[in-house]
Figure (tube, rainbow, N blue to C red):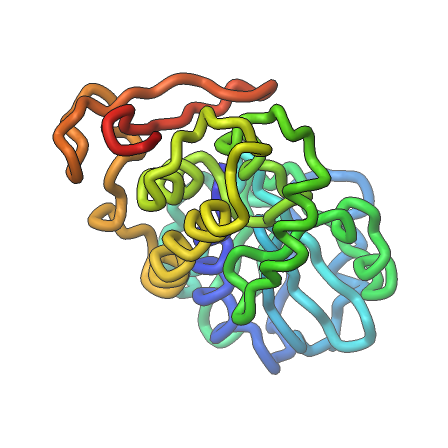
Length: 258
């Protein structure tokens, strides 16, 4: 599933194309109920903002309308010059917004909805989200409060994937953060100090921010996907296993994550 940095990179690519502009064309090729009326509802409206919170992306329109997107496992936002080939089949396009000589296209998005700004503010799914890991000023107090409200026996590596605790972390950056902080992802949350929990967040925020600006940076990945290879810090072989109810894979070094 795309993590917060991937969504921020989508914002980085979409914002210069749409911000402040009335699109030349809006199309909804996917035959999803209700989407056929989107071009009519959005006609003549300028885009006032493109932003993100965790794994959720928002295109905010003049007049109080908002497109909300969550890509889950299959979706992707593409931005290409109009007339150039898309990276996915046109049959997989759900939404096409043309402006400034570019096509902004959402492919395969299982969550794509048009709502009012007031509904977006009070939507229970969105209101329940924890602080955004990539917020300019991270809300550490809220993060720690929500972490302590969780099951104290839950392994910290699993707890960090709960979007109600911290929004934007996924399997890659959970593994990378725990490794950077020297924290065993299998340790019970109750046995993790506030300082250790914050060390995980502080370790990944700059790396995720760079990924959000420039795209995914393989050079920033030190443990994720390295199962069976020597740890870059201590040389112990990196291990991997699934974790939590959703069986999300985690990677860790048993030598230096204790």
